[in-house]
Length: 141
Image (cartoon, rainbow, N blue to C red; front, side):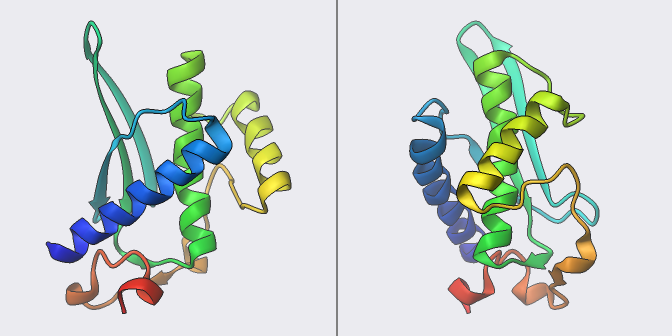
């Protein structure tokens, strides 16, 4: 559990940094969840609960070891979904033209690799359950 909390703390810090740099602080800090999905490496959920109340979640899969480059590309991909949903009220789950145009601009200006899908064979899978949820092996050893 401690590693999971450290990983969520890392995601929150990266989120805050890139929220400032790329989105001009326009996004509220979401809840971060480290999931155990075999097929989904990142996910964004924005659930409207009622007037002035919502539940915002960014999930990152804890089954893989990420380089900082990979982790940032995944996180910012999900932040882009969040931004288009919160600011422009767009559903970009299908990675439409608006999403891809913004992703291309972010990729060009920041050297990210934001794509609609990810080839999981490019990612090292964590085999040991004791290492699960370490997100960045280079950080948590």
